[in-house]
Length: 120
Image 1 (cartoon, rainbow, N blue to C red):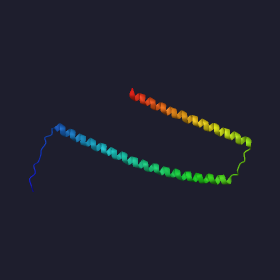
Image 2: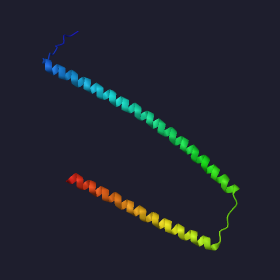
Image 3: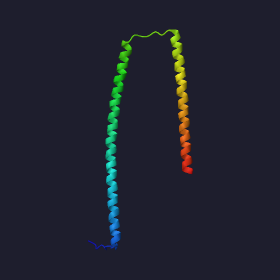
Image 4: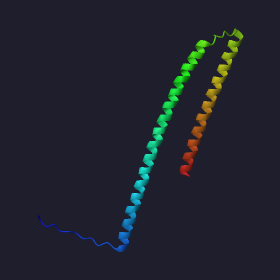
């Protein structure tokens, strides 16, 4: 074997202690990161299980609603009530549109205020 020359670097005691502290701090951060990742995976699995249960319940509800619609008799509304119902639906849809527009404006206003805070 060929002889290899070794390089020695002199480190002060304070530098060595600081280096050990930095290494321990990095290990601590790495362990914290691993804990966070494990917690995330557990929460993600729980979320997926909850979504699956919700999907099953929604399918059951849809089947039950279909059965209920088949079982219940069909209602024949008089013309007067049909007109009132149509007017009510139109009013409720227009109110929903207005509320949506108001919410959109509120969101835009908040975004502008946030930008102003960042600038000032």
